[in-house]
Amino acid sequence: MKTHEFNLYIQILQDDTLTGDLGSVDVATEKNLNGLVQVAEALLKKPVSKINLRTGIHEPVESNETNAEALKRYIYIKTLLIHTHDNGKNLRKTV
Image (cartoon, rainbow, N blue to C red; front, side, top):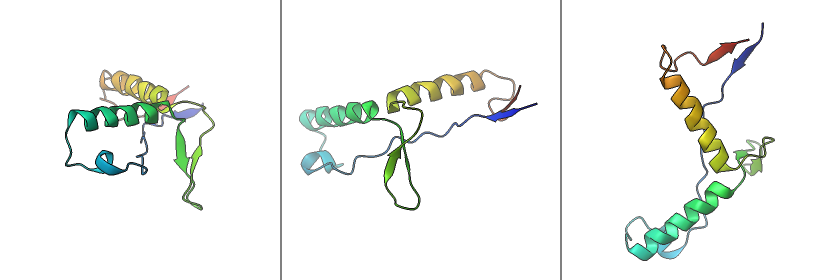
């Protein structure tokens, strides 16, 4: 009997390279909001990565997924779990 645990944690890393108005939470102009949309779309296209705790550097994970693909997978799994009897509390699946 094998037990599989689902990894239901996802964090799309922030972009620390925002400068000028894009880096400000106080500027809600249409131009700035459109710029933030472009930044978000670029983050979704990047490969999923994790932080190497020894170096503090973000490294790609072996799945070769983009952040968008991982987010879709996460939403799909969470939706399935919400519709189960335990509302997703039991994340172990026995094969």
